[in-house]
Image 1 (cartoon, rainbow, N blue to C red):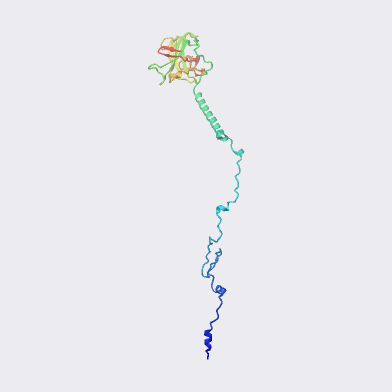
Image 2 (image 1 turned 180 degrees about the vertical axis):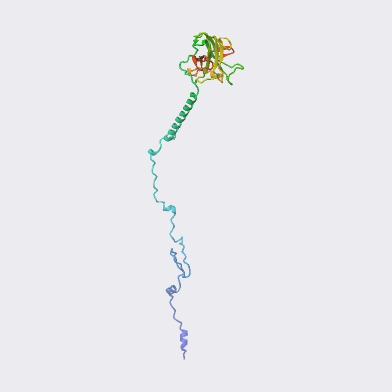
Length: 279
């Protein structure tokens, strides 16, 4: 009698159809999902960590330069030529005005300084100065017959200022005075072309119509200052203002203040050397 269990073992069990859906339900898909910017929690006990975007699949970052590439840059306003300061020779108007003001101030200071110096020195008036002494001259105390003037080199041992190449010289010959006898003092002042007193003032005593020191009616008076260079005489006398002058005064006493002018005249441009005169 056949075994009932043998039928079971001999009959193969029916095959089960392969269902992919069951596998997907029982097991997680090992294929990772596309990354997102959202934070995924793996488990309640784990800390949340951001998932970095995939450079291959994520959005391409925009360069900073491209952000403003299409932006319109406003143009600068053109300067108004009317607002530019006026210039002359590369200088602004205010700079030119400042320079002019500085020049005027300097000129004013120079003028004031020169006026101060001039006020301290008596200056003779050079108006209508005769080129030669207008002789004869008859004063109330002293009379002069003739005065000759010229320039010469200082003699050895002569009392003149140092480094003088040429000095003026006056040769005086006395004459009759208006009064009688002719007694008094004669004073001679030499000035340069600017009216300044140059050298010593010479005072001579006159007794009975002669020089009291020598008893002669003739005397040479030498200025103690002149030209430091002989070449300076070349341009002397080109104008009336450049002439040196001699003033002659008379007085009753040596130290008195009552001096009366007798004459004033220009010193000649002639030069005398070794007893010879040159025109």
